Length: 331
Image 1 (tube, helix red, strand yellow):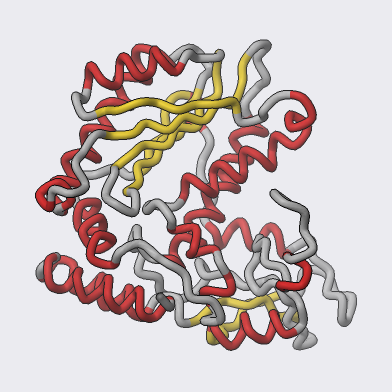
Image 2: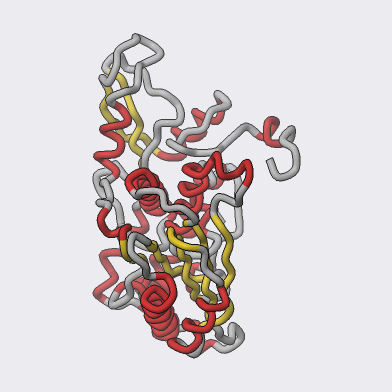
């Protein structure tokens, strides 16, 4: 499934089932991501790996849009890095990541309607609120929560928590008591302990990026080969994606901050990029901070960068296939 085919079909289902309220968003989704903002020096140099979707003049802001996922991911991971820097270290406290699942019957069509998805999303939100109040809340602790939809319609919550070590069975008990459809809870420390603790900022950033997506499997949105049209991948079913967008359109808070995390403001992508560019030196002319952004067709820009063996998007992990083939398993 190509990006244009995915967007077209999701927007078509939005128009069919979302009514007049979502018609404008469906149209915006169809156009979103066609162009990317690229950094350009006053000398005309345009460095590879400088593409940003969030700086395009208009974005659809749909939860299921792959281009807007880049913007949310950039803002969320930068915000979480700011949170980690500002919060004081407490002895014995750890960064922990939890996933709360929900019970449902994927073979029952009534379980994957927009209203059913919305109902489970609200239930998971109530469960997380109760878990925060009864299990996680202590002075100085913080929690970031997102809710997403799986490829088959399983609504689940992702939690990134900083505080004392927590038994995930306590979370399961409170979650199931608050919301009957709350399933099991899976959790682990973010730093992993040992050598991994040295790379804590990067690991927090990676978890935040993972949480920024709104649909399970939407990591394909961060796949430059797919965005460039050179690799076809299996995406979320467009009909289910449209239903999740409808479910989130009203009265569903897909993300929420608790405790000490609320005291750290989220910087808009424009501010993040401005601060980042002020320190960058042009490799062509040697000028520092003399950058502005121009619009490029996404596919043309990515293919041009890939022809040079370079990624096209900022903070992308793309590598040429011949380098990927040489990577060891898990590398």
